[in-house]
Image 1 (cartoon, rainbow, N blue to C red):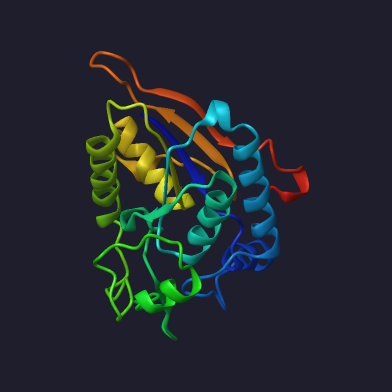
Image 2: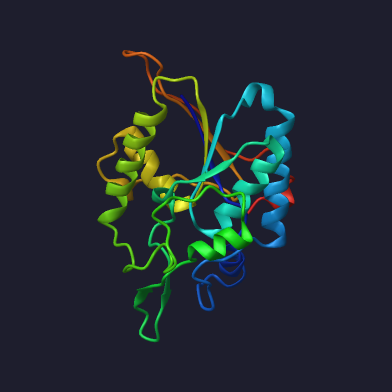
Length: 229
């Protein structure tokens, strides 16, 4: 199996951080900015133009809107469906800070919103009318556990196959996923940077005894330098 990990295009929260260095005024579930949509369009065109070597067979996305919008741009270029994989959401989940700086979990978008706004997205049966998050802020102890669970499920579903799987996800989740793949015991001691709209490729062995290949990380040479965020 070949894994293509894709970070979503620039979101409104990313732009806010770049402009202010802070989170004041952040959205709990931001959309892509104009720059983010340009990044997603250029990435999609690159994957379509080079489809023979990429050969993507499956596209998955988190339920966060910035990832969904990026994944659907890729879907349109490759004529492939997009399925939701809830476990690849960004660390923390859906939340906002209250007046005391406490991070409070928010509901997230409900099934009706996704069906009306993104009708081609293949949703999980568990998504209901009350929002997909509806829980407390995800603490740091839960994050590596979730990343391990995702990697194990990915290998169970696609390991030892010729599938080429694109996962549209998030920068901080990427760190925990890489730690799980590389068996790093303390994921918070490492940081794997990834630009908006960037691409990483990891080849898992098709047979026992073969090594996992880290082909490249944080590739974004298909974007003009002024769109690197």
